[in-house]
Length: 109
View 1 (tube, rainbow, N blue to C red):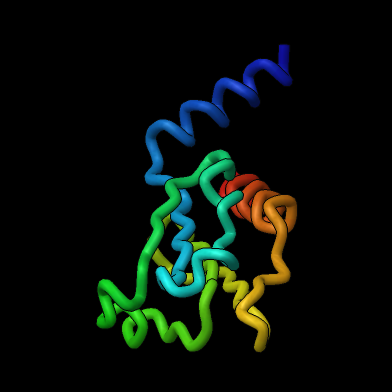
View 2 (tube, rainbow, N blue to C red):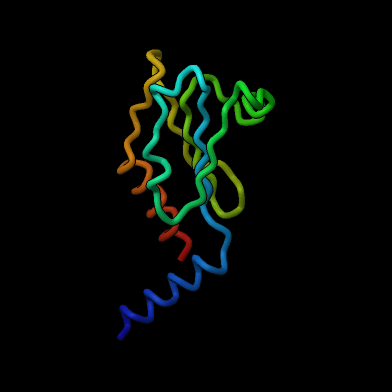
């Protein structure tokens, strides 16, 4: 019964509170290195940003290499960042990012 109550509270919290946001920054010329798996992340809102189509975001978010993945907490603050290496490939995996999102959500309780 206690576990069910915790689960219900967790679901209500996620419904009432604004979501964790994941922004995936890339450029069309680098689509072959895009982290296409970000759309499969759960418990977050995912946004894709092309820094060529919207160059102001590059400076606003200090994106120095693509792809870059940034996680923002419920308050809109950046809490985690993964950046590509010199070959424009990102080392983060879906599992890495999802585990971080899960920990972030659970730390809110």
